[in-house]
Length: 426
Ligand code: UGA
Image (cartoon, rainbow, N blue to C red):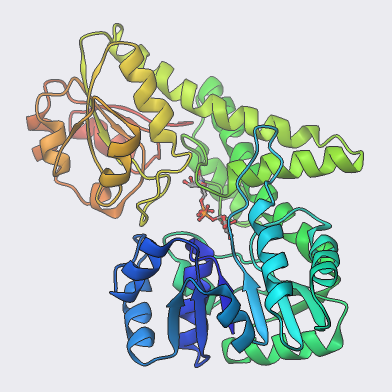
């Protein structure tokens, strides 16, 4: 089989399929990336990925190549996992998807199952099928939509232990092949038509983003009413119909998926003739969380100009080095615009952050960040921060004020330790 595109989804899927015993060719146009992968250099930090890439490459089950034609010829199942970046309108740019479809068509030498793994707008499957037909001489194709639900930071585990596998196809032959491929995972399989599978992906991500914005709106009400959003979330989440996951209030969602997919779903809906205004509100609340956090910092410092502020956590979530749409970007830029000097530390994302955030003093530990700062903020809830020696942090700071954008500490404990502690929705 072939996986085209070695981004987050493509690389994890390729490595995991190889780990399941398949022969996989991972294809990318980026020669440097492919040669690095061949020498065992993984472009992303993702727990558990490196060992399976190295092992399967060494055992010959996993190959890396820039030769799409050869990979297509050698494979019956071809996963398309290329990027679908947003245009300025929010619409997904399908340039790479279309090009890959043309190249698959031109190189096909028999029956091929073309599987959409990238997140694509509904009706893309139809377009892929048309393109395959248009650019191929005689080969036979089936198109399948098989959206991926893995999360960064737990991608390998999510891939290997999915809650469900969605297989959208009109072809019984392709469905049977896909079921056989996923059999070792022993997971629940949901068969749909292609379009419904495409919508499942956008609807799932938009729903999760809505859940986060909902609890963030509730957090604001809690602040106004002097209540505790953590307790409210506990009480709500205990209802099995609601569930406790994704009810953590804070500085909001970031990453390469939720912001892009919510935007894309609004665009898709509007093109189909439905105004998904509710999702615009989800975005608005998410943006507000960052400005509200900046206001809290201003409130604590009175004047930000000339102050030194320490930032713990830069990545959009823990266990990743990904800085895409990370709340830390807007927050740090906001502080710098106000005239603050910013010191920062993140266990994995500092190399990526350096490309995006200039004028920041990057440090090698939370304690180095804390040294001499007027205020310390927590933007990403890494375990390392939950376990740090707070007495050591306090004595290093010029003033013991912590603004916690992810609610990782208990306010009562923090007051007891002598901190001026500010958090979200409590
Ligand atoms: C998300 C989905 O969870 C995956 O199912 C999906 O496959 C993926 O997008 C994708 O489309 O590729 P991911 O963006 O990796 O995964 O990370 P999440 O764990 O979902 O977190 C997204 C953002 O929401 C993070 O910034 C996180 O801090 C924030 N978040 C999450 C909250 O603010 N509160 C919560 O309660 C949960």
